[in-house]
Amino acid sequence: MATAVTPEAVEKVVFDALPQFGADPDEITREATFEDLDVDSLDLAELSQIIEDEFGVQLKGDDVGKIKTVGDAIDLVVSRAG
Amino acid sequence: MKCEVAITGIGAVTPLGVGARTLHERWTAGQSGIQDGEGACTEFEPTEFLTKKEVRRADRFTQFALVASDEALREAGWEGEKPYESDRIGCIIGTGIGGIGTLTQNHQVLLEEGPGKVSPLAIPLMMGNAGAGAVSMRHGLRGPSYATLSACAAGAHSIGDAVRLIEHGDADAMVTGGSEAALVPLARAAFAALDALSDTGISRPFDVRRDGFVMGEGAAVLVLEDAEQARERGADILGYVRGYGASSDSYHLTAPEKDGGGAIEAMKSALADAGLEPQDIVYVNAHGTSTPLNDRAETKAIKKVLGDHAYDVPVSSTKSAIGHLLGAAGSVEAVATLLALRDRIAPPTLGLEEPEEGLDLDYVPGKARPLAIDGKRAIAMSNAFGFGGHNAVLLLEAE
Image 1 (cartoon, one colour):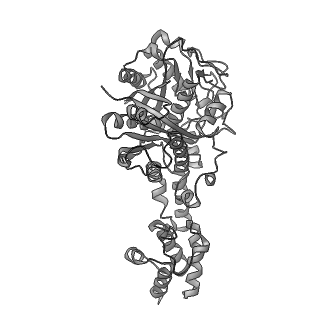
Image 2: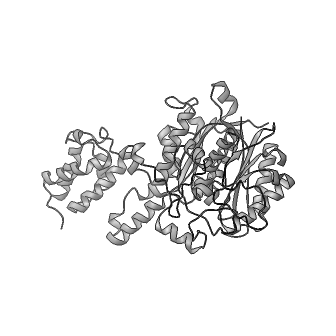
Image 3: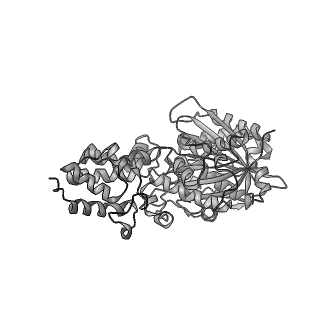
């Protein structure tokens, strides 16, 4: 069963996932940009897979291309679920 | 007249340890990197050399290539600013199979968890050119880059092609080599099904008891430069690639021609390319796989090409110490050959006690010994032959 999509739940999943890609846990905030965290398009493809797995929300192509910050990603997931 | 191509840096990761000199010193000391019937790089810990992100972005075969390339570029004095424009430096990294570990892991995920769980990194990590791409990105090399994929000749083809690109003027320098990491159950089972692997787990080329090759893994990378430009920049030159010859058996998918066939042509064309005579060769680093067929055919080919001189030249097999590194073998053995020439030492064929009848060359059994070059230039032949009937031969010279 997919987890209920709340901003808090999504934030937790995203914050927990990013260090796997090499992001420094101390630098992960909603305001941090993926560029600053050295998280690139391949990492975002993996993150999308984790999110789909957890929440049943698909993020594809254009969606992912537009997001710049960690907060953008969280907001997008929440809005998609709504 | 074609330009000279100098070798200014070398690096290796092998079952004998991390580092080109480690390979050379341990092999010449008679140490073996084969344990439990396999040549695994047990001393290699990727996180000692690569960041967490770099490790997860690279299949093991690419990790080997990256670490070997760092060593080679460091030796060439290329840390920091490169001595050439980035678009004048190319990169060719050969492999026999590519990221088969990534392939099999993801296939298992596909079967057990479904297509939605297959990693987006699966293709970029498993592709055979991943090593070349990663090395090029790591060092900012923007000249021609690609992989050679010719089974166990790939690591010699890569060096040969790199030499040609420099000679042709397509690049001033090349970072080139070969890499393999195929110690996974699928590859083991498949080679065993072909009856190519040693049942005893012992690599003893040319011995009457040899029963197949022992799988190994690792990589070697060389920095090649147009020698004139290397001298101008004051580089320390380790040696030269003097000749390259390549051919095909066009005979059988896995077996060599029993009389040496295409291997003879490759050796001859390497000599012609270098403008050298058989008598100029002071050492042969054999392909020497420890399979019954290769060691017989290769011995015949060496005799055919070198004539009576074949009996005066030490011929030894690196695979006796580290196993068969498949697509990395040609590069690892080129590096081992160069260092042997520099130290004027003939490294041993380990495990060879009882040569098969008819295998009557000087295979340097068991123990290294000084390489007597008698006032000649220190020039060696390094052979690499692959499934598919691919043959690649390099002639290397040390100062």
